[in-house]
Length: 68
Image (cartoon, rainbow, N blue to C red):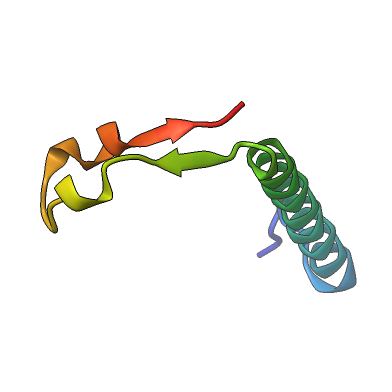
């Protein structure tokens, strides 16, 4: 019986399409990662009241102040 599926891409054609798709996803995620890294590279912060920081506490984020 013949396989008449429209999505049946076998052999080199299917391999090339899969490779191009995976490489395009890789490029897209790399660009997003570089953009996020560049946006946060200039986002400096300073820690205030170091003596009051507890090891496990939800209020530790209050000690971090952005320096802009």
